[in-house]
Length: 207
Image 1 (cartoon, rainbow, N blue to C red):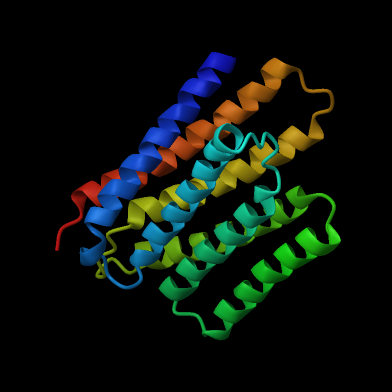
Image 2: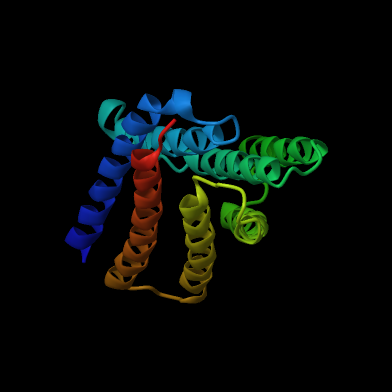
């Protein structure tokens, strides 16, 4: 199971790199709101790159300090994306920025909350709600062309299932190593589906 986990993990690295290259090549033809999709995937690529580089380049084996940055950045970028797509009042952007910065300050300075996983679950639920509302609006408004409808659907699917898997993982006591890698592999497969939707969308993009 460890080998399977590593295979899916490196597949995701390859997908992320492909999306970054293709997205950068087509960045100029993206509409203003669509550029946020590239910013989101670029941030994920940056975090994954640091997780890979720090242990090998700087011999820093513990990269857990990146986790709060990942949670806050992911939350801010995705909520900003859907707030703009839903045309919500601009003060919602300020609220999400304050929440993201506030979490990083409280975690890095005061180590609160002690368990960042709680914040991760809450942020994912907020992302699910916003992406769900955006999907409903996009499906109902068939007259408006949305080039990233597949990506929006996959974001909703990924975070919905991911929260469920995350909760199940923390409810199970004394996980064996095999069970642990099974859960991680399921999450990585979900990530692969999401990344493939980005890649497919960028490939089909035209002016």
